Amino acid sequence: MNILVLHGSSREEGNTEQLTNLALQGIPHTSIRLREKEIRPIHDQRHDADGFAPVADDYDEVIEAVMAHDFIIFSTPIYWYGMSGYMKNFVDRWSQSLRDKRYSFKESMGQKRAYVITTGGDQPRLKGLPLIQQFQYVLSFVGTTYDGYLIGEGNKPGDILGDKRAIEDAKLLNEWLKSQL
Image (cartoon, rainbow, N blue to C red):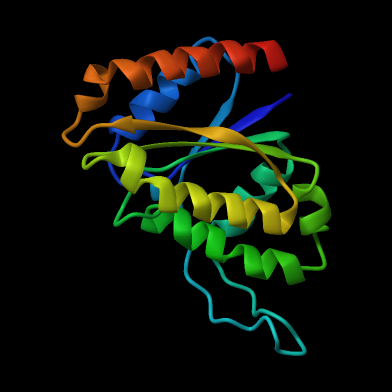
């Protein structure tokens, strides 16, 4: 199993990245920080006869990395009860991939597994549930097996290291991922 982590945080080494890094300690994986990529929004052309117009940005590079991996970890902080803007912009572009003749997008995504790691500062285990549901619905739509999620609490940089429950959950996820390799 090869693992790809899509980091959706706007902050380098923020709480979500720290928690994700703990969960992946000692596990080979590829990381992409969406904040370092230019992924532009697109105009909705799902129903146009010709489909979407090409967009000159980094989306193809990122989606090709997704297609090349078996297991995708979506690592995003909770922003206004949902995924970060970087992550949402990337996922919105899936509409384009569904129509792109270069990919068998839904078929390929149907052979993948996914996990979500997220953190937030205001009751995240409750208020982060809309984000978790959003990923469940998105992944279900494309047929990806959704293996679960990890939610941690942290607001200021480094706060996550004080969330003992999240640290323990990250260790359990680490053990589980190692058993899957």
